[in-house]
Image (spheres, rainbow, N blue to C red):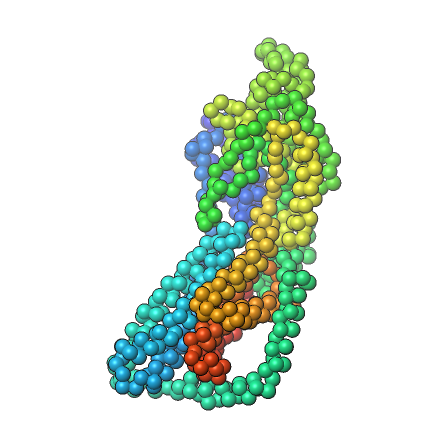
Length: 593
């Protein structure tokens, strides 16, 4: 009988085709489906608000301890391909460098014990491999300076993995080669051409012939290229943030992206449920402080209330009412659903206080929450009547787990500790940074001017669906800071290892040229800065230093101080390592992602 009288009314409500409501006895289950987290949150908030209105009309209340939200997704966690590529690339490079020096040590120490050969090869390459691994991990650790939690965690994880990769290479690789050396029968079965010797016979003479002829021309050319690239990267046009409304993961010719474009073009106005309206949400009484764990994406921190908050004074009442009226007159405010969402609690309180002081049905005296009280109300009248009006106007007495307009009371003493004023804007959520930036700056500038006229006991902030916009804004500042920090750290590491300022400066200049040229190429290809691009740029900075550092360390350790001898020592393994790095990269170029 209880179900027939009450819950059946709720089951007859049309929540849309993306929401299905079921009931069993006094338990209610709402299944909501969406293709993005933002849409899911928006739709769930609307459904929960309808639930609360229904519960208020039937004098019911949901038990917060028995109310839960479960998330089901078809997404599967895939292996970190970037980390696999990084460790494979660095490990192969170090393996080629060590194996080449192993062969040279065998020729130089012919007839010596195996331990002496291992000591010579490892003593020559350990420092070089350590510097390259340390600088690459430093580039990853520099991502910790970003405001994006995912990039912080990714940088720490990748940098730590690269350091562990170095320790495995300098311990396991020499031991493995020494064991193979003890088994000549195994080696005899796998006779392959010595690519290092082939490189020395073919490329070294050709390189030095052109180097001697065009050395000054090459220096001038690459310096000019560095200056031009730096102009493109830091001045005009620079790395831009996304300008498209949809967040694309595939090429434009991919069927998924073509479907989105065609649907937007030909079905405009048909699928309105996919449009997410940006709310104008103004929060008062809460400090905008993020005190969560910055390495845990699921840590939201704790709510911090402002101690000086006091909304009961007459000055605050007048200012809040005037603020709501000004907000409704702004050109960025949409008043279509004003009566549905109880946007401004002060308007609801004024309507509540207009009722007769004597209940015409029960004869109950409603004083002081009646028409005898005049606005602005006394502080004690305001506090008492606001709590009473919250019960009647279906506003939550306590936090029900979702955000909407209305006052917020402390549970133990029902004291007003915060309130939210919320209207809908004329803007829709989009992935375009330009449009979101226009919306945020327009509303934020207006609110900044208005809050300056508020009483000292009232402070607030503006918030909306700005998570993705904040992510893009953080990437625009954090990426360049990470790049500059990485270059400075690598210069200091190289200076400590080589103890030569000129060599360290030249290596840093070459690395800067490589980085700026790479960035400028991406800019001219039309790349825009996003999450994946930011992570790739940080890794590219670390990878671009490896070959330069190998040369720098080899030069500092060389007794001859000859470019030709240094090139013969590290040129072959670096050339082969470059081939192994480029090969998988060329394969990935055919990907549509």
